[in-house]
Amino acid sequence: MVATAGIIIIGDEILTGRTSDLNINWIAKELNLIGVRLKEARVIPDEKKIIINSIKSFKQKFTYVFTCGGIGPTHDDITTESVADALSLELEKNEEAMKRLKKHYSNTKIEFNEARQKMAVIPIGAKLIDNAVSAAPGFNIDNLFVFAGVPRIMQSMFDSIKGNLIGGKIIFDKTLTCDLGEGVIAKSLEEIENKYKNLKIGSYPYFKPEGYGTSLVLRSEKKETTLSATADLIKIIHKKGGNTYFLD
Image (cartoon, rainbow, N blue to C red; front, side):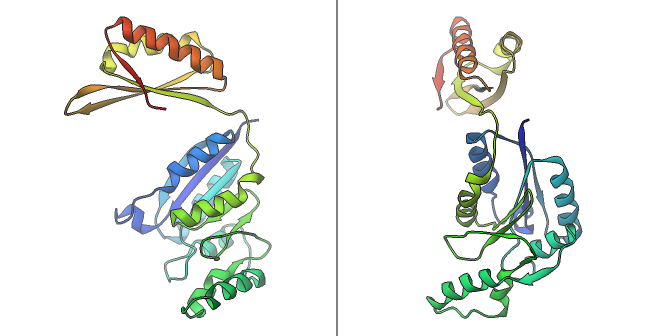
């Protein structure tokens, strides 16, 4: 069975363009390394109904669901309460989370006030996800992992749970670029895909001041398939008068 994943990025700041999302790309790469297929990534606003519906939908569709954002101390951080409502769970001020946060703030000049204590409130029965950067934990319920939105903190949280994820066959990929237009090699790409079972080729044309060309990504569950198909493609490109350059 193929392990799948969905990512939900939560935050008005992403949708308005004030903040650029870095989390989808990073998580996708980490999942590839353990054989988990990212099937969908969704960016949604800080709106409770949308968060609830997205969580319910993703939990049913995917082996693993990751949310990023909305678990901080401010009024618009509503992910935790939305998760609780989506799963029909009560919230509590978690004792272990409070202990971690008290210890963290005791070493600073920042007051551990009621707003910051909000970060210790999680659904009853949830497992804490370690946060080596700022102490405030994420949490895990069934196949749902709730992370912070700040990339460095999210990465720390993901690293702490990565060993618990069960993946499948790892996808082997090879990326190369050539100085031929996509239209010149389109037919050849189709022929190579048909030749090799379970091979996928992504074609991405580019245009730069010094010229144009096409970047190509070959992916397969079998390393030998990826390498053999790449060799075939290089021969075809050279035969057509093009040059190739590896990007990885």
